[in-house]
Length: 114
Image 1: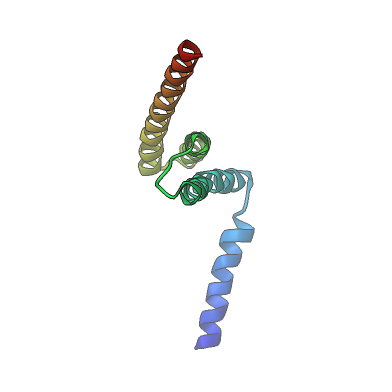
Image 2: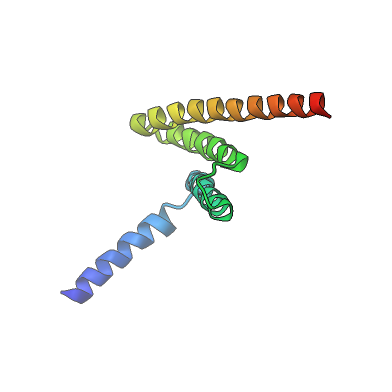
């Protein structure tokens, strides 16, 4: 029984990660890696600062991963995934616009003080 289960599990993973691996799956995997990477950079930045920090690169990775996952979801025709990623990308761009506006304002204050 354990041998049968082992063969079934092995066959499943072989089908998913070998037989079904195509360029779209590679794009989806790259997108997921970008999306996951954003949490790593946020964690590292927070550990270095000793407080919760959301670095600029978090939003860049969010947009890159979100857009690629949206393209992947559109190709796969998954309505739940499409709606989730589309909304997320809008939010990421909005947050990035806040960060850029803050940076411009800070730069303007430094130029006036300088």
